Image 1 (cartoon, rainbow, N blue to C red):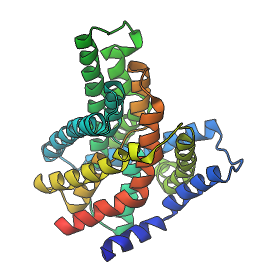
Image 2: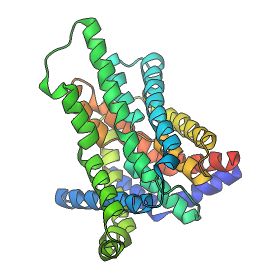
Image 3: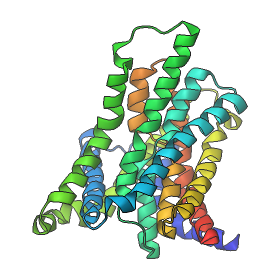
Image 4: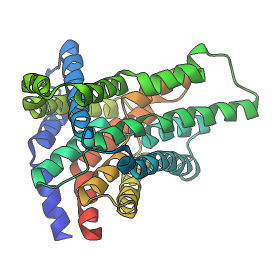
Length: 329
């Protein structure tokens, strides 16, 4: 336990977490601090492109056969977390079917920011992880979103209440889940990193490499502000009703590490798989759910994923995943 506390304390003092906390404090004290929308769009693109380019460059040295067990495990974990979330949120916390599937889509999907924080944590600790984990991030983003929406549409058909909504078509949802901004930028970055000449990659390294962690800190400052604002906007919040936002990361992360160990990942790889499985999407999933299930309460799924689970994982989840990985390995 003392070791886990030491890890959490060390993580809490990392610049990324401190920037995130500054963002939280800015909203709590009603500071007039704001991040311009255009700047936010720009550095989001840089962050996602950088992840993709780095992963694509490393994929050159990895065979597809080596990746197959992790790909299968990633899809399995994504779907498993979808159904675990639905059972927990609907059966134990008594949310409606509509809101339960909406929340499940978010927790079956993944958070790129938590993934980046996990990579930074391993880099800081000097721990090896498999080069293809950026590709696993992309693979885990969409399946649960699509399946959650299909399950909800089937529920409506059984109830005989499905209404015509062109934005809710499966084709439209697939486009949102697999070709939305975040996925498209990650895939584009992977493609560039995989096929570009190494000399060309060196030329763009100052922007898509050297500045990465500084830009990420500003991004997390903004995320801290948005997360806090989303909590403040939730009406009549009862923390007991949102305990699932803290329970699911622990369940998902533990299952992720065990799965990584079974399929033969390194400790660092299993840790990253845990970070992905224990995270919740607040970019791709909200975009798709807003189109396909517009009646769902955005305060519930966005407030839990962004306002509660993201800060929990950044401060407590990542140290917990690492502690479990060390214990098992």
